[in-house]
Structures are given as structure tokens and as C-alpha cells.
Image: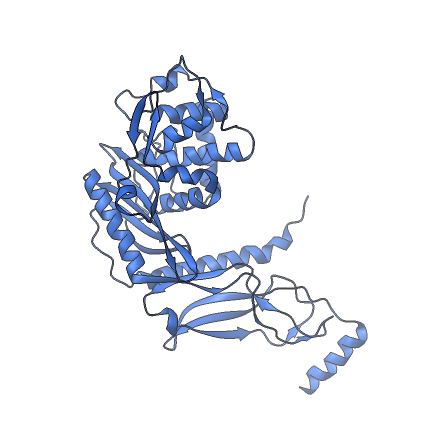
Amino acid sequence: MADFSFLAPMKKFFAVIAACVVSLSAFAQAVPAPNIDAKAYVLLDATSGQVLASNAADQRVEPASLAKLMTAYVASSAIKEKRLNPDQMVNVSVRAWKVDSGSSKMFIDPATPVKVNDLLQGLIIQSGNDAAVALAEAVAGTEDSFVTLMNREAERMGLKSTRFANAHGLPDANNYTTAFDLAQLAKHVVYDHPEDYKLYSIKEYTYNKIKQPNRNRLLWLDPTVDGLKTGHTSSAGYCLIATAHRPSGNLDRRLIAVVMGTPSDAVRTQESQKLLNWGFQNFDTVKLYSKGQAVATPDVWKGSQNHVKIGFNQDVVVTVPKGVADKMKPVLERKDPLVAPVNQNSQVGTLKMVVDGKPLTELPVLALEQVNQASIFGRAWDSVRLWMK
């Protein structure tokens, strides 16, 4: 059996980072959020991973057409893995053609094969339920088999409160999610498949001589908005996941707003814009340290080298209320003395970010390089030095 014990320090590091994000999110939410007319909502800073505001974020809700984000994600993964070709012609089944006649469609026809790329645009821009079924069948043979892939992806992403029953999101007792899970799904859509993400900003699409607009009104109202997806059923209400990116210092900062169960199309647009503007206006996202950047080079005893670089194995980015970033001060606490062997990626200290004497968050500091033991003579000499220290 393969030995994956070397991954243990990495898993511990990411667990600590996740805890720090929760702590920072709680700090961020100390800033009063605006009143949002929705059954549930979340505002996520996708750059730092912090939740800036939320209400009923873990409450079970219907995804409606927001389920198509996962449909598109699975289809994009199939294209990326060469299991599907964007120029491939797909035969349209009667099942896809006959999907709920009163719902949104791209109007494909069993008599006319359609390109995978056209189906993706019909799914994302026109929110076609027929496109969802046709894509599902193209990827997995049947919609049921495709739904298995959707749920497998949801599990891999850690969407613990999400379950899909179909590819389009039409009402079903086994179609459910949360605003928090949808924010995480949206983040994956943006960053995991950038080549297809550009489709979410297209304002209209014509297929079969029928032009249909993107239902995300924010694409017309806010030039910084470049996605994502609307959803609506009579039971789910009007829903929208909107994302915008604006510069923040040397970063391109991205926020994701999820609003669920609003009373109208106009309200979901208004409340999403309100959340995005509030997040950009009241918070700064700053990069504290770069991946591989040494924050110190402490002494190592009994080692093959006398010093070790310590820092972080991923970029450290945090979101804080306006005016706080300039007040943050780092305080490094090390595990001294450091005695070899020192394993790469092992935790050797903690960096506390302090504001006005109060700790804002704690970050695990790792050894950025491997330091093996010195020779027996080197170890003996350092033992004497440590004893005399």
C-alpha cells in the first residue's frame, strides 16, 4: 500500500489555515451588513476565502437553475480531460427535447445535431434545461449517470449540504443546497475552468434563429460584474449568484454574492448589487506574504546547515475592514531551539497578526526547506554549544 504519511504536515497546515479563515470571517462580520431582502445570502471574498456577510447561509434551499453551475463544471471537466470535444456534434434525445415545456430552453431539436460548445452557451447564457439534459447525456450516456458525477464533484468540493437529482435544477425533493455551498461552487467555476468561465459574461446568445438574453441584469449595470448565474422557480423564488472583480492594491480582488429566495427579478439584482458594493467599499483584501517567502532564517542546531528559511507554502491573503490593514503588525513566535532533522513543510512557529495589541489571526509558519542531521562530530559539537548556551 502506498505511504501518504508525507502529506500529513500539509493537511495540518491547510486545516489551520481554514481555521484562520473562519476566525477572520468572524472578525470581518463585525462590520454591520446591509439589510438584504432574501431568504438566505452569502458574500464571499473569493480572493481570501473569507465570508464577509451572511444570513441563513446553512439553511437548505432549492438550487433552481443554479444547479446548472455544476452541470457546466462537470462538462468543462470532461472537455479538459479530453473525454468531450467542444466541436463534437451531439444527437438530441427526445428526453432532452421534451424537458418541461414551460421552462427555459435553448430550443434544440432531435432532427438537428448540435455542437457541445453551442450546448454550453445555451446552458450558461440562455439557461436552457434542454441543453442541460443534452450535455449530461453527451458526457455520461444518461442524465442519471451524469447526476452521479455531479454529486461526486459536490463531495470532492466539500459541499456537505448539497445534493443534485437532475442536471437542470427543476424542483425535486433530492435537489437541495445552501447559500454557503453555492458560493464555494461558484468559486470553483471561476478558478478551475477559466477557459469556459468567460461564457458567463456574454449578454446574449442566438441559437436556432432565436436570440435570448442572459438573465443576469448586473452584466448591463456594473462593468465589474462578469458572471455568474440566475435561477427561478415558484418554490425557490428569484435567485442570483453574481461575481465582480475590482483592483485592490496589487491584487485583482473578486467577490461572490449569493442571494436566494428574493421576491422578484428586480429585487435579486438590486440586493446582489448592494452586497457587492458593500463588500468592496467596507473591506480591503491584502496579500501579507507570498508562497515561499522567508519571514525569518533562524539557527538550526545539529543540522547539515546552520540556518533554515521559514515561511508559508501558499500565498497568505486576508480581508479586513477598511483602515485595519495599515495597523496590522506581525509577531513571530518560534519553536526554539530548532534541532535537526527539520522536515520541509513541518510547522516551526506561529505568526500572529496583531491590531492595537489584539491578535487578529494566527498563521502556521513552516520550514521551507529540508535540514538533515549533521555528522556525528557536528552533532556532538552543537550538543556542547547548547549545553553552554
